Image (cartoon, rainbow over all chains, first blue to last red; front, side, top):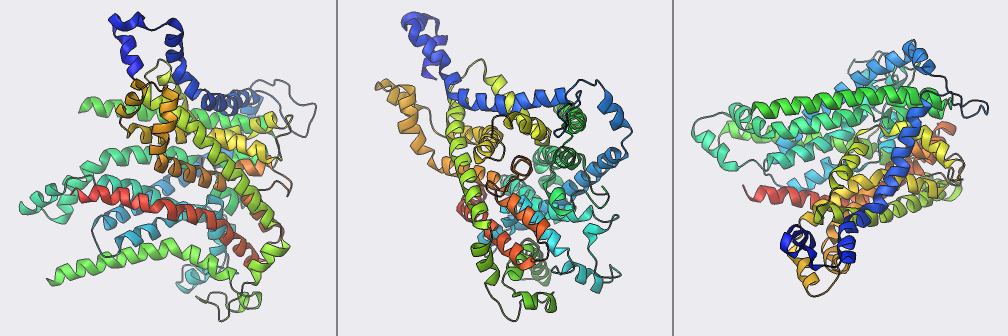
Length: 312
Length: 277
């Protein structure tokens, strides 16, 4: 900073020799060079390469593949029913996961915002799922849904929700709910932590003033808490939506997209095409479509944000 | 104390209890099955605690399976990734925090973009790039990939820690004749130790949890990380629930250790905000 201030100050500008000025100007680039080089070679180059694969016939096991085939993959894709189902499932998966994580996360944050005996330890315990590796969360829940070792099917049977203790992960109608429930369990702490931090930044005297004026708890929540939380809620929900729509781990671990592709989302469909069928070209074409959809979504958010800001 | 108040307190505590049970039950069940002897696994299927416990599954997993190798591989990969990422992110984060330079806007934009696009897109191209270099089926390949994925977020994290340290400190050192790099290394870095620890922890857990790229890049058992080993075990011996869950409990250990380490800061940070009110 000191050197920068000196450089911007015209009178002192030429006091330093050229070599020193060059060294000062290049310093920030030298500091960030290693990180940048890595990001460019391991993320940007593959991204560009992946986009080019979308227009080529690339199959790992076929040495004669590799030629440019134009838009063929996209023609196949437009008639691929599994892709459309995956697209619909992505909406379903993302929508329910985000909604339930947010609602239960908000309730948890509100509960933890009140002081009570043992709050520290309770916070540590309810935030624990957040630290569980996602593959283990997926396995753990698929075991819980398994009638052989897990209690859930038996409980649902006892409650009359199920006709017999069976595995919902192998039921084409219900299989999607398995990963969603696991995702909710895993993601509640994230929302709770963020929202709790925002809650605790609300000045307490506002609440006192409101109760003196005779506002009930519901009214206080609606007219103080919610407006204060709104910016945090908006940003967290929007970022989380993008993140969850790409989050394929739980589905791959728990159902592998099955039975019969009924719980496949776009991200897990891409992975299946690349990993199981080794069809890199087709996988990249689907990935390109997903990227375009996500960019569109992000642009919408940016425009919406600008509009909301200009309204204020 | 009025009756209405007592009711609301009881409701509050019950709701908290429900959350604690929901959060812990799956992990409790994992632990429970891992200590249930095979004989009792089916006869006492949904009992809350088996009538007899044993560590036979843990013993088997540690002695007769390849899980110790997987565990070691995961430790090497996650540990190296955490260290390398933290070094690179400290340097880049320092540049972001202390310098105002022309390329800064573009670097920040680039790093934000890498957080937005679906990493699953890169599975195929990265495999194609690493394969001729002999970096598939190798721990080095995984470390390179994980390091790149984690550097952007770690840089932002380190930048926020550097932002919290007054600039006068290194300016004073530089007036005394130290170069900026010496000031950075000897004065600023030691002050950011908590931030460095947090970054190490975050990256370690992220690398420990990563699944898709390790599935794609690793095929043999020798270089398999814990997720790959556990999943291949599940698909091969899907009836040995006790052993799988014992392995699952082992996979949980590093993550829980890290969590215990940082949750104090997490809670501290949050309650520090509460004290104001």
